[in-house]
Length: 110
Length: 116
Image 1 (cartoon, each protein chain N blue to C red):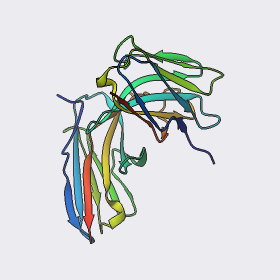
Image 2 (image 1 turned 90 degrees about the horizontal axis):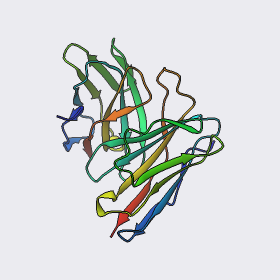
Image 3 (image 1 turned 180 degrees about the vertical axis):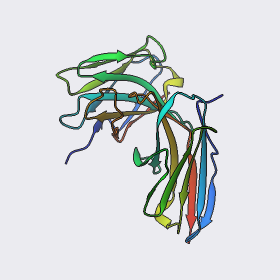
Image 4 (image 1 turned 45 degrees about the vertical axis):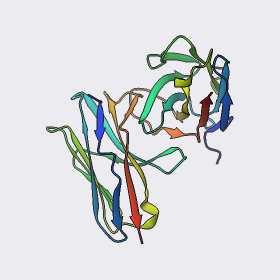
């Protein structure tokens, strides 16, 4: 079983739609959680950290459920520019080592 | 300001040859990381440097892989006797420090390695 699991997608949605991605992690000792965005043939870039209380950044909302070892990302009012692969990332014991999921691909169509 | 840079951006080599991949971290970042991303896969941790020392080499897939960092800055990842399964994108990241608290890691554009 992978340490971080994501639905690979692709999720194909129209502009303006709301879309949600889920991610599960296997190590209950995981302490830090993130969503990264990766455009085609580009490097990953931090989208947002995920906090226990949930957090929002503009159109993006991240939630963490420690009991179920589950992380989510909600994107409202999708833009064409949101098309990318979204990587769920965890770190155990807040250490330096990031453990990446394989990513969920999002395609936003006009 | 300048981000993490990597060279070469692309490398095609023949099976059995050695390759060297270079990473220039963001100035002032003491922590440096190497990851590998195979086609359709997530990033796989290879090695971590704090300054010039590598406290964690646990992700290196075999003894054909080695890395060094000099002057607390530039790092080189060397793959000896390359195999076709080494074909992947090799990504370098750096962070300000690693002192037990999670720091944002900034990634370079990667080196795409193809072993024929």
